[in-house]
Image (spheres, rainbow, N blue to C red):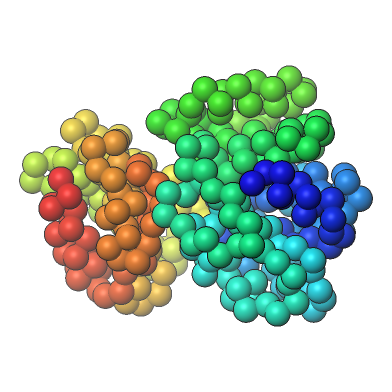
Length: 316
C-alpha cells in the first residue's frame, strides 16, 4: 500500500492535500507535513481546508498557505487525510471533477474506502504516523519543518501521550522528531499555554451545564449558540471540552453537545475503554475510534440528550 502511494507521488506532478471539516491537530499537522514533503520533492502542491486553520495551529509551517476556496484547475492526485467519512472533506472536494484520483490516508476505525488507494491503519496513533511511514519508506529524511507538524499531529491526537493510542511506535517516532531539533516546550506552550480569554469564559459556561447519570457512569456538558454570543468565542475554541466530564471518577463515557444551528447538535463522545463509542456514534450516522467518536443529531437539546442518553444507557 505504501509503495503504491510512493509510486503515485513519483509519477505525478500536481497534488491537492486536504482534510476534514473543523480540523484538529492531527488533521492540520499531517496535512501540512505531507504538503511540506511534496514541495520538497519539487511537486506543485495546494493545501485546501473547507474550514479555517484554527488559531491554535497557525504557528505550523505552511499554515499561512492554506486556501479555503478550491482553485479552478486540474489536480493529478488529491490526498485526503484523517477523514473517516468522505463527506467531511467538504463539497468543494467531494464534488470536484478536476481531480485525477484520490488517495485516502486515515486511522479511523469507521471509514469510507473512497480512494483509488486507501491506506487505513486504526492501530496508528495518528494520521501523522502514516505520513511519517510514507516519507521513511521512500527513503527520505524528516526535516525540521516536517517534524514540527508531525509532532503536533501525534501529541494532540494522543492527548500529550495520555490516551490509550499512545503506543510504542508513537513514542519512537516522536523521539526521532525531537532529535531533529524541534523545541517541544515551544510547541506545548502554543498548544496548551496560550489560550484566549474567551475560551475559558466559554468553558465556565459549559461546565455549569454538567450533568452526571444516576449511576455516575457517564456525564455531559453542553455549549449553545447563546454561549458563543455571551463570550464572543467560536466553535474552534471548544476543542478538548469533551474531556472534562471524562475526568470525573467513575465516569466511563463523556458526552459533549455542541449546538451547530438551531435544532442541530454535534455530539462528541470520549470513553475510558469500557464502551466502544465509535459503535455508539455509528447508530446516529457518525463514527470514529473506540475511545473517541462523534456524530450529528437533529432535534432540540432535550430531544437530542434523551436520544443519546437512551443509547448510552444500553451501551453501559
